[in-house]
Length: 495
Image (cartoon, rainbow, N blue to C red; front, side, top):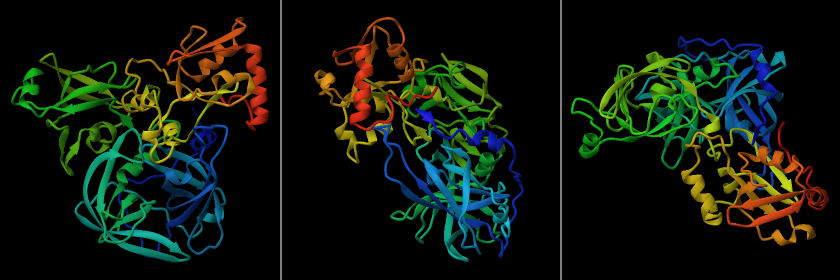
């Protein structure tokens, strides 16, 4: 897969966003909320040379700088055009996507027309969060109509946003009003200090998630060419029962969690070992369920210390002292914070991270890399419709635990032509070898198929099937498939 968001990276590095850490109340007459409308066209993960029908997405935007708008990432994924409308104007302004975070689910837009900023007052997100407090949700409904709805903040914890990979801070909120969870601004009812933006809300339960202001600041302040948040690089298992604690040598005065999985190429891969017991992060003791006591917010999952934690002196590109138990011996190590290791993902899952699926056609046979997004193309009941083997791999082998950056290459389908008739029944089969070699990804498959002096291409599949073509025959069948099935080219692999 390749990421389609490339042209905006250098553009954003030409300027910076001025962010204030001090909390500043919003003014009664300030104009800072806009409507965002995007036309999006998602790729087809089964037939990657096609796109799905265009859709229109709506969300709210918050002005955070000169002609800069904060909105939800879901609104602009695969956008072909994005427009913004502000109070006091019937004009739709074209906006460019300049920054996006797939794990936080937020995006930053910029309007080039200078007149757009006239009459707008940028919001200044601080770091003060009021929990168990009344708030107001601000929505822009119609021309010069600002809607206010009641909401209450409950607690702060960490979880994944928008099917991302990293657990990040969120504030649980409750409201009896009907809300959408598409970027509405939430301010404290009394002080009018911005608390964050509403990114999710479920009417049937009257609950939702708010991205807190300090996490928004972390997103706005980070360089677009780098990732905004660090990742701990491991998964853990609670150590709550006495037999397990005794087995790993955890004494009564200590507590902690068991390191159960380590992501390759992550901060943890060269430092931690499976079955280490994590006792302390910095000066914070970890309880048997993986929580620590935050001095302000109470009990929070330990991921907060690794993925956010700037208020406690932690954060990306910093070192955190850890106390671990290895083979019943206490050790102190310095843990260097790094971003999520994307190469560790063997089978992409969660949100698409704005990637476009890649494909390779050989003799009218379509190969691609397995992803959860491919499987989900088979409808709401996809788990009952796809190969059980693929389902198992997706559920239990998403991560390259061996340290290799190897993908699962899939023979997805055979485009029926007279020249490949012997293979028409093949579909959803894993590729094993090509001319005796095991390609690590679809690009390496392309290299093996096109290079070398061997006149034949022998493709071995996981079910024991062999597909054999003359290389000259492959080129002719590809040309025929392109003509018959209206496919633009035999592959869309990036350089």
